[in-house]
Length: 444
Picture (tube, rainbow, N blue to C red):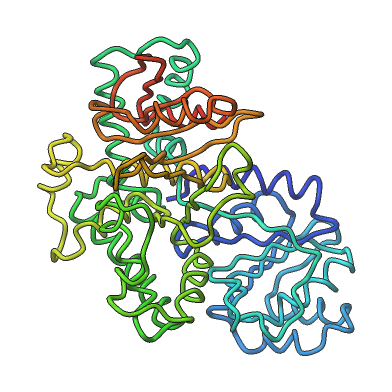
């Protein structure tokens, strides 16, 4: 099933404004829909297109790249081999999974300069050193990241228009009301459970049960594990990925690689972390040391948290030790009746929402005076000359000492403080409460 994706609109902007000078490189984790978006765009927006999938490509097509100094011959051979005619200024060539054939990526410089056609590249783990170490990375290349489907895209797939209606409630500043809030939170928990991987969304909208949806997500996680082991056969990179939910559940100040691997830290672990980030399967949040000075300049590169890029995969990874996550677990999740405090699950979903807007994830932690405990703000969002502090909780009840202390300590830069939870819109003691389904509007 094809879904409406926001990346399509970005490609239209690229074609209109940049395609004559730059190819577009679509990056993202495996199975987020890069290839589907690229081919749909090529089919709809051009007179003709040639798609070359370098993960499964005939040798006669690869041979076309042996000599690109004579582009007239190159294009003639390519059309002859594929049986597809190219039209000057009206055709696009799609290089799918280009990381498997770096020579094609290097050719982009000459192909774009030639000017006859447009070029779209897709790739996963595209910047891993072994894939690009022997080629010249083209400067005639713009990059865009395709993320898992966000909540609005998920609602589109489900045929619901509640996202725009909820935005109107948000702009009014009024509460949604108890029953409406419960209904909207139920819808959001469905997204939380299914996630934004197109295969999982397709399984949901076509009526599969949650055990079947969970199987789809497990297959994606297994695919990621295979990728990790190809890069790092020690298994440490895979262990780092698997450790994310458990480390978030412990509410620690920072992610610890040693806790994930059970082994002493090595010089290779930094490289494993960068490879994990390159895979686009995770998002990283850095601890900002002094928000009053600069968010970017005072971030601590050695103090960070990791989040999964997709909330649905996060849920599955939480219960990965079970053969298949039973419908019963999903039923309890959707009814908000799981016994444990799931604030960290909501925190991961909010991190995904922030990252999908191409914002960097930043948080702040500092010690309490005369105490071994610490304050923590889950996320810091820059808004013009102010910093919006965000705390994420599952219920929204209880004390809010950290956000209160942040506003007091950084009163010169602190903007409106927000508690993101399941509670309806409310203002209490100068703190704004916002239900999670309204959080995306705060980022607009």
